[in-house]
Image (cartoon, rainbow, N blue to C red; front, side, top):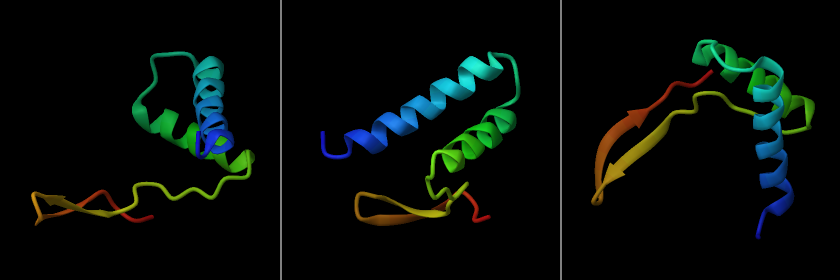
Length: 67
């Protein structure tokens, strides 16, 4: 796998958050916890990055926000 270490760290962060918090919280809680866990693992994190969305070579606009 091209980015095996990075992928493993991200998936590990996801499981750490889920195993620590469990289920039942709003998405915003999991997003904040995952951001914290990824930063603790040394990753550079940008939340809700705006990206241009294209469909069949035509612009649809932007999705997301910048923080």
